[in-house]
Length: 261
Image (cartoon, rainbow, N blue to C red; front, top):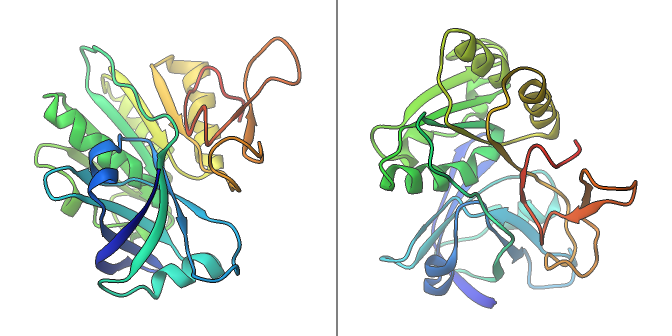
């Protein structure tokens, strides 16, 4: 599962948000929507731990994998300094991804910030299955939104939201989706990824009001990435207080009815 990927492209798409196109044919063949790769961000032992990044796209034909990341610390700052033809050490693909079922209504994706990454990959796969796909995507401002149309196939309906009112819906992406449901939006299945407060709100609303089939992709700090250290465990509904599952192993995608946020 270890491999060395070569940087084909690197681009800053939004404020402190970067796009990497990596050449690694095995990763491109094996990656599924919702999975992640664990990247060694530097050549030294500082920082010591790898960083997990959702697979935002994979093309077996070209042997390439897409990754998005936001610079938030030393590790991602090192990644932002990569140049074309640089090599990076990757572990993966890891984790369990999204599972789409037979539904009569559209597949709705709800994303916040950089959490849109795995949903872009999912959207392309759903379109190939000839499903109607609707994306709700939000951030605090328009400057923090990635140019998602560039990475999506034609036919995906895109609804943008900015909390400062600078583009699209003026408010949170959760509020934008809620109002669409109130106006009669039919939902066959639903997938969400983004900041924990966003996920907590949308899972809570779904339990109280809608009961749509909902899967959420969780973002957690990870050490090993393969389930050995149990440092990324999250609470799930079970028979006792010690019911936990590992985001890196049993996740990062969970059924919203099972996970405790």
